[in-house]
Length: 109
Image 1 (cartoon, one colour):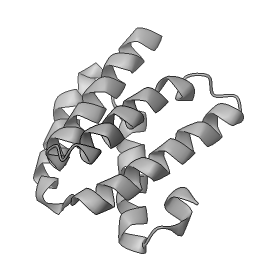
Image 2 (cartoon, helix red, strand yellow; image 1 turned 135 degrees about the vertical axis):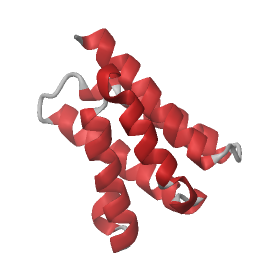
Image 3 (spheres, one colour; image 1 turned 120 degrees about the vertical axis):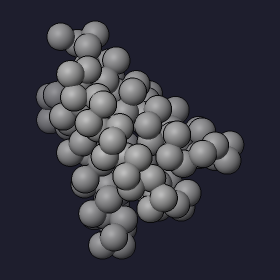
């Protein structure tokens, strides 16, 4: 289920992205984009689709445990999944996801 059932490489990428998304805020957004751009070539469509599914499970699990802010992140992961299914650029999907999460966190504060 989610990242737990993914290959070790995909699981590591998913956990890393979840950690990055947890820390995204406007003050650190440029450093997050730098991180993503350095590794952009390493994100393939299938892996990112698996990572997005894992992120969806992680945010839903957090929401079930009482993290009300987690439910606000789910539509952004759904957006990423939708873009991937439309054959959008994978790197831009990841960057867009981070941007949307950063905007959401700014609205929460």
